[in-house]
Length: 97
Image (spheres, helix red, strand yellow):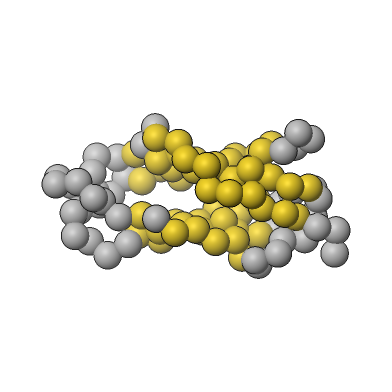
């Protein structure tokens, strides 16, 4: 899995996208599942979810996903949950521009 924010250096109060790509590393097509991207800081938290209804087959090319956030300035932990499995992706620094 890869992820990126667009723009790379988001500005406070301006929309930005968190993007990632997924593959099915299993041996059978996926069932419907949810992705939830979450931005957490001491002062602010937001999360966006996507329901994936279409099967992702083993061997398919990576499936790109994205959600849009508008957050105040701060440093945020970026966490992604795919089908109930959570992972910490790193920090996003949102500055006053």
